[in-house]
Amino acid sequence: MKYVPAFALLLAGCAHRYRVEGLVLRVDPGNRTILVSHRPIENYMPAMSMQFSVAPRENIAQLAPGARVTFDLRNSVAHDLRVQSTKLENVAIEAPRNELHVGDPVPDFALIDQNSAPVHLADFRGRLVALDFIYTRCPLPDVCPRLSANFAYIFKREPGVQLLSITIDPEWDTPAVLAEYAQRWQSDGRRWRFLTGPPDQIRNVAGMFGLIYWPEDGSITHTVATALISPDGHLVAKIDGAKHRPEQLRDLIEQFGH
Image (cartoon, rainbow, N blue to C red; front, side):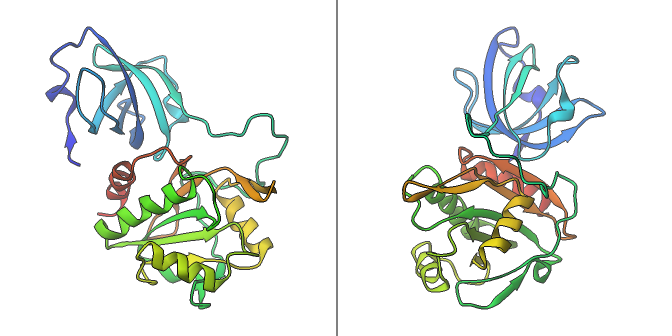
């Protein structure tokens, strides 16, 4: 998906108001612009990556790569900018105390993969890492299966990216179970690894990325996070929720992978 300058597409109908929903790829606070991979804008333009100016009163400081946003496009400028929250309502659970922010270095951690081989995050220094959290028994097609489908899309199109999917159900998701799950998604077992380990270690790693989860009625209730870790080991983007399109994840990866 190629970046299209704003002026090339905002000449017609600029006095109208259009609702935009997309994924932030880059933020330029100095120029008050954001690069967004957006969904099709009804009666205006197809899905693409595009730079938008942000109105002076909008809080651009709340934005970081990976944020899912909505805004009104008026006179070529983004107004009423809102970050889409995925916080669970009516749940009295504190956020993890070790949660990282975009720009922070990511501490090394050690788990095991679907072949019972030890895996350290530091093993992938020098490569862009995309990381998510799933569990193989997830009954909701729009959550864990959707995340895995997104990674399957990236696996086929971005060979330079290391993919790590970490289970939040280690008691069930043994290496053997994860190996079968990896085959289901046509992983090669190297560029896309499925990780498990002791529950306390997994909870610590999940906490770094703001993930909250607990067992409930035979399943696991959880928030959703997909993170990008730069080749030098810093958190460079985090997507909350599972509603992004695989093409948007690819656009985000291409901001940091080249």
